[in-house]
Amino acid sequence: MSVFLGIDIGTSGTKTLAVRGDGSTLGSASAEYPLLTPKPGWSEQDPRHWADAAIATVRQLVNDGSVDPAEVKGIGLSGQMHGSVFLDANGEVIRPALLWNDQRTGAQCDAITDAAGGREELIRMVANPALTGFTAPKILWLRDEEPERFAQLKTVLLPKDYVRYRLTGEFATEVSDASGTLLLDVANRRWSEELLGKLDLDPGLLPPVYESQEVTGRLSAAAAEAMGLPAGVPVVGGGGDQAAGAVGNGIVRTGVVSAALGTSGVVFAHSDEMQFDPAGRAHTFCHAVPGKWHVMGVILSAAGSLQWFRNQLCMDLGDFAFDRITQRAEEVPPGCEGLYFLPYLSGERTPHADPNARGAWVGLNLRTDRAALGRAVLEGVTYAMRDSLEIIKELGVPIGEVRLSGGGAKSPFWRQLQADIYHEPCTVTNAVEGPAYGAALLAMAGTGEYESVEAACDATISVTDRITPDEATAARYDALYPAYGQLYQALKPHFAATAE
Image 1 (cartoon, rainbow, N blue to C red):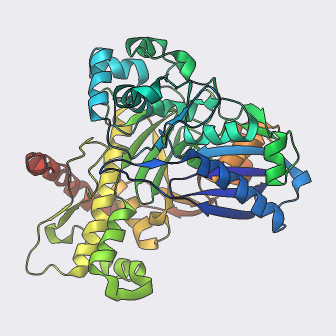
Image 2: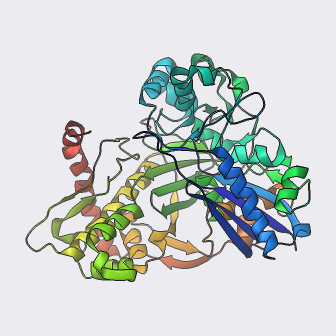
Image 3: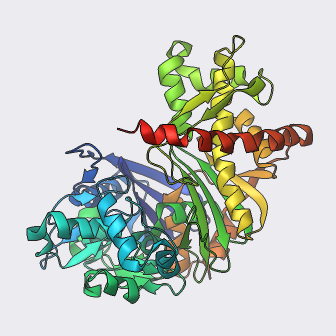
């Protein structure tokens, strides 16, 4: 049977997954690498570590017998979005890559907005506002702050696309990841000549753009030898981690929305038409499904808020602290007797785009105990995810099913809490491998194993659990939810006044 590899270039490490054509997994391998923080707010990595990790993880799967090299028919790539890899004329790395969570480019974001003619004009051109995490402001930062390096610059690649270059020798990207550069005309799925012109950036710095399942190159002899694979294996475009993860969870048709609760939280809605939020609260990117788009909201501290609560106040609960937190939270009534938690421990992206926002419990009283604090954290994170769902509804994207994944899908209590707070039916699928699995499915579609991305998902992904909202509890949360948003607005001036 044919085998397909999905390689996901994450921030903490790379994961490679081997998948049969029927969707079953043969094995996985991971490799970690360091994160560089040379100054407060800076976040960098050496791109060469990513390529080395991709090669090493594939080699591990070959060496341990998980993969027969002769059966490998395609490779898909996924990875952290927005990072900037700067290459010279010889294809050599000029400096460490600036990552998605790097915050140094505030001045450049303002400059981009001004050059575009204002926030509304910028959103008209590229469907999104300028945020510090995106790629375009990083390029301007290099031009402004390191002009001698900018003078050497010939090519800008995204993280997974640098790995592609190392594996195939080809410069290429695809529409889902390119959407996060702030330089793509998202509506027309091509680089925005209009914005590039206003920023005085050479379009030649950017690689050709493909659809996500298209073959973009083939494994070079040198890379193949290092991996233990045959030369010439096709490498498809792949996807940014969120789009690839959505493919890996079957979010490929209108009406199915993903709510992924990891360290951060992502609400991802497939759309057959390009729809964007004029206020810029949610992102609109090209989907990894050809000719489709997605609307995405991101919260920065989802399960990360629960981890913080565990680390700071519940370490005495031992190895099963998360299970005990949710068990005790279940004993607290919905709404925690007026206690709210704002999960803005790292600032917030959707819907507030406020780096100064901070976390808070509001409504403490003499009856408040640790169980109530824990339930309030779970409710607050889920309210924050609902913020994104509400924006998606405002844009007219239908929601027929919310598909749960990540840490929030592992707890039966949190699954039910999500169904109740979202007031939507929720499901869980058999797909638990994330972006690497989606990248492998894209490779299947691009090499002819299946006729389309949708067909690949239909053949490999199935619903394993359905969660229906409890109508009485859902009505209770509908009544409580507006106060959650009012608390942020009330505290916003304080957040700004006390920002450091």
